[in-house]
Length: 464
Image 1 (cartoon, rainbow, N blue to C red):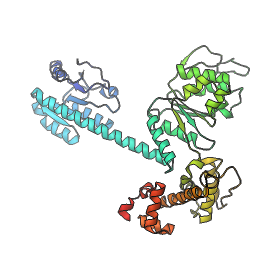
Image 2 (cartoon, one colour):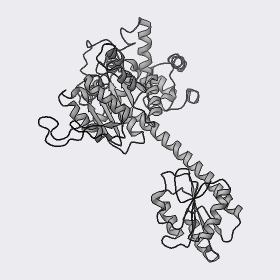
Image 3 (cartoon, one colour):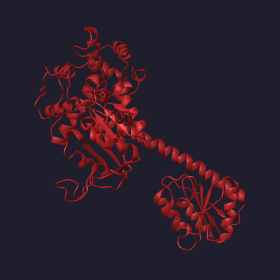
Image 4 (cartoon, rainbow, N blue to C red):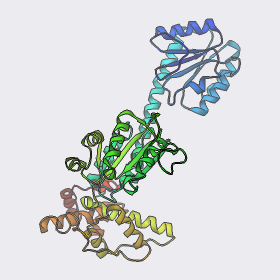
């Protein structure tokens, strides 16, 4: 493993010393120990060349021209306080080294020192660095999960699965196809995929293909050059090009014409775009997230959607459950939206009455989460629920979704889940609110697959 002055993710040690003989001797010691070393004669270019979250260690002399070891330590501390820096000192620099240790240096070695002392210190620093970065990665992953749970509320199994799938796909470069009814939250899912990815600092560009006139959709997506068509007086950058370095969310993809679908397929395969009226192929670094409310396989069988584009998009599908499929989340979501609306309008938070909770659970919610949010806003403004109980089919498992016993069980599960989401210090409090003996509540929790911990509290065994 030869040493050079290149620094990349594989570099384990950066060695900085203006003495070429000492630099060569130390780099050979590290190299023979199996460590990949980058050697520099001064520290002036180091910061700009270090990769983000670099997993290595810096070994530097204290007295150097330009930036000395103490200034380098301060600079690196400002960039990453956990980056290990080992300082090499002459006999007269021990006091400086002690000062540096207090400032955060990992270790210092006084010249002359045995090779094993250097190797031992470097190996310990590398082990510490790996531990720090592993812990940092775990904290980021936990923060991402908490952020996701805050965006996609719900304790239902369907939402738990959706959050797991988003977490698994967010860090990849895979294009994603989101399937879901109108109002189910397709753009919320697309934004979550973007914000939890490495592209989070790049643009997120959303476009609804169904809202564009067919005469302008190609210009909007791909851009055009002057003179490409009547009225095209100047160059226009299309949405795909504008999203370069980030994510493009393309909703209602099923409404695109077959001609546009051909161009989209080429873009997905080759990652290049050509503006209308132009001949230049522009390389793109984008992630495409498409969304549809239709079954594209059926549309392909009917000749309304290209089969090759369907198979290209369907590599990583995400299906958003309708609100009818997760009725145990209805009251939780409603309360969240109502409280947010009350705060936004400076109004007191209103309490749902039992008959209103029952009405929410009976409603079909053809408009899904969007309709629920509008209903919650109306309620927060003191205008009641305003639900049309005749609209659409009744909510699955609540009325009309199975026999009477199944409907009663689904209704019971939703009410218990709602009570678990309320602030309770113990399961005893939940039982009292529901008017149930504790043993009966325990039995119902087991039957419905619920637990007190679902609401962030402690387990039933702890609070009996």
